[in-house]
Image (cartoon, rainbow, N blue to C red):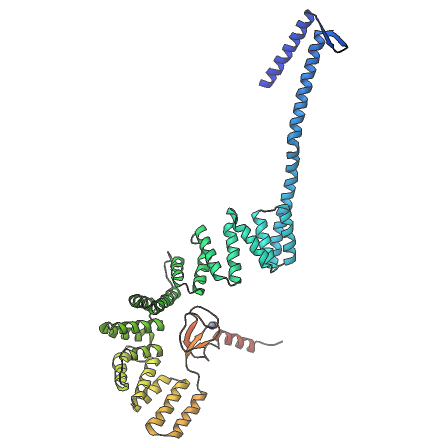
Amino acid sequence: MLRTIIVFALIVLIATAAVWLSDYPGDVRLTWGGYVVETSVVIVGALALVFAVVVALLYRFWIWIKHGPGRIGAIFSDRKRNKGLEAISNGMVAIAAGDAVEARRQAVAAEKHLSGEPMTLLLAAQAAELNDDNRAASIYYDRMMKREDTEFLGLRGLINRAITEGDLKKAQALTKRADELRPGTAWVLKEQYELALKLRDWETADQTLSRMTRGKASKGEAVRRAKAVITYEQALIAVKEKRDADALSLAEQAHELDRGFVPAAALVVKLTADKGASRKLHKLIAETWEHAAHRDLAEVIRKTVAGEQPRDWFRRAKETVAPHNPDHTETHLMLAKAALASNDWGSAREHLMKAGGESPPASIFRMLAELEEKANADAFAAREWIVKSSLAPQDPLWICDSCGRQEEKWHAHCPACDSFDSFTWRNVDRGSHDPEMIEAEIVREIAPTN
Ligand SMILES: [Zn+2]
């Protein structure tokens, strides 16, 4: 509207000026060097007007030229961007399909069209991993880590790389950074927990496990067990460092967390006995035997009285330990051994028979042979028991559920496969026959063959 008024006003002004000029005609004379130009004022006015119009048009043209290339550039860069996005999408499909060559080709295309974009970096890193080019993958993850928008993603890649390369310390430091960036992320906590276990960093393992289970209504048996093992290992360190009070307190905590956990039960009995707290020890022996009756615990209980005669130990075991778990195989084994040592043949035989059950392990037969020889000097009968022992199932041991490693002593980590808390007290023969596997085999056997 304003523009129209201005144009209209200009036209009126020019017309008025033209009329005015024609009413007052005049001449203009211009002398320059040897030239002389003579003309009327009207012509000069018209020329000035044409000149102004030409200048205005030139100015507009210059403005168009100035912004023109940007407009043309934008069209080209959109096309480039679309090509880049297409390469990223194709590359991701190739990665999902496990096509390493195609993934690398698309990663190169994406880098050409969309260099430095977060998705381009991710595609390049994943393609490098798929091509087993770990060094390149690390470089791309590193670049991602240096950008604010992809730092977390880059960290994840680098953590996985460090774990694969066995650099657990580096992986741990990276998970710390990831935890700072996004505290409480589930996968970060899980990695942190597993790394802490592998590095025997019990304190971090304990804290991380607490964070993982915080706010969860039911703290499962498995979690309590893991905490018991971690606390027990901390108690062992305290024992080694002669921090007696800490050691006892930690052993008590571990035992409290899982009363069936034999090593903790044995340790808490030993440390309480060392402290000389006899009333407490008495109650503790009863309680631990009730929940964790075991060969290793019986041995610790036996040693709580220094210099005890075999006969005294047998009486003590019978009167103060056995009643708290009278029918357990381990109770009968403990009593049989104690009776044998104190030459009480009748009791030894009775408890050996009870401990053996339906398929007595080899050690029962060996003890029966010892009994026969000591009590009756019957070498023939003894030999018979020895033959039977060679055919009997093997005695229970601490066996790794992951790799089958057999150990006399319980370990938090398997010395062979480094699995955490994988040792269970069982027979070698059992467990190697998984009931489900047997069932599957049976199904296969009875299925009609074609
Ligand atoms: Zn193992």
